[in-house]
Length: 197
Ligand SMILES: NC(=O)c1ccc[n+]([C@@H]2O[C@H](COP(=O)([O-])OP(=O)(O)OC[C@H]3O[C@@H](n4cnc5c(N)ncnc54)[C@H](OP(=O)(O)O)[C@@H]3O)[C@@H](O)[C@H]2O)c1
Image (cartoon, rainbow, N blue to C red; front, side, top):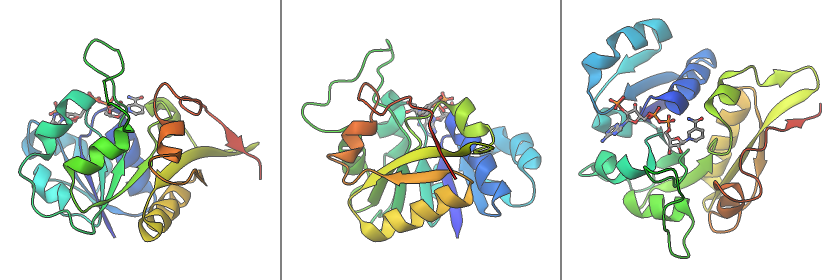
């Protein structure tokens, strides 16, 4: 299974490193293009390559890790998303630091509309990148990663990835209900929990 990253800033890098450590092949992409990522992929090692956003979007599982105001531009013009698995790590934060206006939708429902036909799973958004980068297997238990989504198969795949990275996945249900609980500004955001062994 290959993993693509659209955006490899703080959150994308933390997750790309976890992916490579777990033995997955990754394709990383950013706004400035593959050449800007040459030294980073050397650091990540032979399982990593840098590509265009379209190349990252062609992976089996695609992590979206771009700041909210840039998501639409990052995803514009990409080919068919039908059936593909997209992991939404994003929080709806405007450039001035306030929450973006979403009407009565969750942020993942807004993201899902930008990747029509994709099977979107929300995960990792509620942890700081430093917590994701840290060792998830602590003596007291494994760090919890909340996840939500509407497609059981996609959720199983993402659940297995979260576990392979060393975390404890906790499924909160649908994007509308679970996605809301884990979204920034809601009760489960920024909870750094360990699930005891
Ligand atoms: N930082 C955290 O602790 C944290 C925790 C949980 C969730 N999140 C969420 O994760 C998302 C990413 O946050 P971050 O802190 O990782 O942001 P970041 O460090 O600013 O990184 C953003 C990445 O997106 C890329 N990008 C921007 N515009 C793009 C475009 N048009 N096409 C392709 N790539 C583009 C940037 O590429 P360039 O470098 O080339 O500009 C960069 O690699 C946000 O939605 C945030 O709310 C962040």
